[in-house]
Image (cartoon, rainbow, N blue to C red):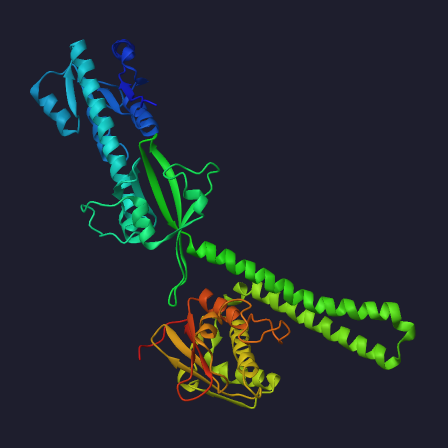
Length: 486
């Protein structure tokens, strides 16, 4: 659609307005009129016209002052202004130019000349707008996280922004020509998924479903996914390609599927046990001894307790974000007492705490409930993965800098494999090699810890001890208030 330039005619004389409208009526402009300086400024702010034909002699505010105010407004400073004036002296013309007019026409004016000047200035203004929009587009494309390319019908790359060059392993130099077609470049680093979606390339699939480029998983890196979207630039001549990193979204979908499957398994297992026991009682209660009824009831009660505990774990995991918010923060001075209370509950007899005295006045940027939950989950894991469920645990806290502390919990349990160390933070990951689904606990512990510390701006890692069997859970936690530099 052709752009229709808007011209604002500012003239207090109805005859002057009519004359200018008649002269420009056949040029395809959108013509708007204003009768004084105040109205001119108001309509200019409302419309941002492509040109203002501004009469100098107007009531309330003359054309010189109007022009000066237009140039002082950042939103209107670039709007072209042609002053139309009956003042033909040199000083008036210079004054008009000093106020910011782009051109000055003296009355009575040549009609053909006026139309020619208007036509030229509106054409230049359209070109200026086009260049400005192109510069904006180029800035956005050059600084976006998405990769953008332009290809022709032969799949030759005509343009690639810096991110696209990075994705395809090209030189970052924008002046360097891309010597190979897009698919050749893509096939060097990625696999095309799904294969059927790429058969009509470079045309869109019939169902407009997205196509992907996938870099396979390796020993050191997870799979990397790029969604490829295609937009026609010129029909059957060129296309714009957008490469968008969707690795997180695809990984999240995969993890959520696994999460849901494990939730279903965990909840259905005790329900099935309850169902079998109740069915036995319902059908054969009259023929069962008191001992047999008691045994079935006891098993059913244990399944109910297991189901309740697992439901609580799920709800706690889903609501873990609310625990991050701290009113005044957790006072480090309470760490030893909290660790002692949890150890007594878990029947852990060999737990030591160090480093508290040096940080007694410090507060962590986590609620007390969050810190207690973190310690409980880590200590439960230490007991669970110890060969005799009686680990020796050392809890230490140390200031790293003015903003964070290091909380480390080490035990003398098992040595974990690289997979276990990597996956332990994921929801429902079970570290036991022969996991059957009936291990006490749901595998939400460390993932819940991760959610808490990440939500507070901290980090965490898990590694094997160097001096013997056992692991160290290291948490870098932010302080609630600034402490003196050490």
